[in-house]
Image 1 (cartoon, rainbow, N blue to C red):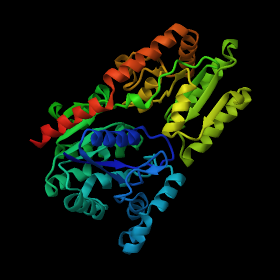
Image 2: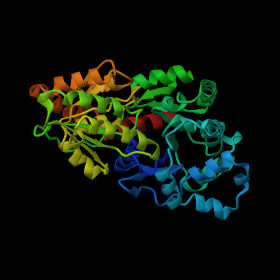
Image 3: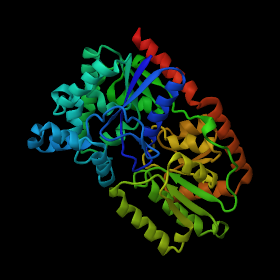
Image 4: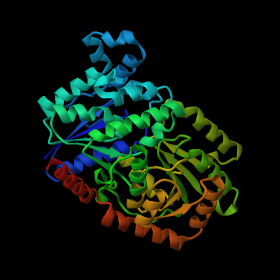
Length: 429
């Protein structure tokens, strides 16, 4: 089966679980004998510093579509200028300089993208459809998130193939908008969802959220969790000398880094944990740097800055070393997440989790048996849970071993990929 996955790139400036999921999924499809192709949008899809799709162009180049949306004069730029703005060096430079994960200020662009052929990116849509018809020639097209719903109708009509959409954390983007925009965008997504053959949520919790938000019929909603290759990760017992708490995600306020920072300060006030370290990786955007500096200043004021390490390399090779150095991992995302790839990466490496009772975290904890859930999502509650687990070697060992077994038994990406292929086959009938 020829499967085209359309995936927003991120330029490689921070740990993007969704992007890593999409890249690993395409590789898994290929290993199972399918002809899988990734078409990147906005930015190059960069994994471990290398572009994964040199043979295809980047569609909807982020610089181009932003300029056309904001400044009418750019809607008639010459072809050579469009080509320049869509070049990989320009897009990678823009990724480093932008706060591209912000919804504020991009409400009109989000609406325009959802409008599809009626939006201001209709030329980019025509270019994508032409590429699918005349070059890619897929049996099914799979979009990695529902903010791209505006493309579904024209692809179904002109390419004449089923269209499938993954669902993961779209609510984070939309709910960050002003209330009036939020309502408009959810209504538009609800309308456009009728043009989709199937939706695939990464967790049962998030499937319920999106069914309510977009009024998706039960027969169109499917749950296929994220998987990893267990053999890619080496199990090791939780680190003892010294004990170390890990954080793996974009280092920002919304992903809960301040909660972990404050919990670490509380924990270090206990003499039992005077040697405990905090190891942080996952990268950042330019928007995040003032926030990070404030956290570093707090560590310095509490005389524990020497116990905090921010690691700039979060490629797969560096992550193996990172996980080996950890005792536990915590990413206390303020409002929870639809899944969180870092959870199963950590568990595959033998690192137990300490996560808040939010989003899909309880679901994943229950499914893996590899972590603790705490409530409420405050520094005090997190510090208490960390203290409890770090003081209990037997529980640490049990969670480490149980978590690894669960990845082998239930989160092997080849098994989950086969489930997705069965879904493709059902919508093609």
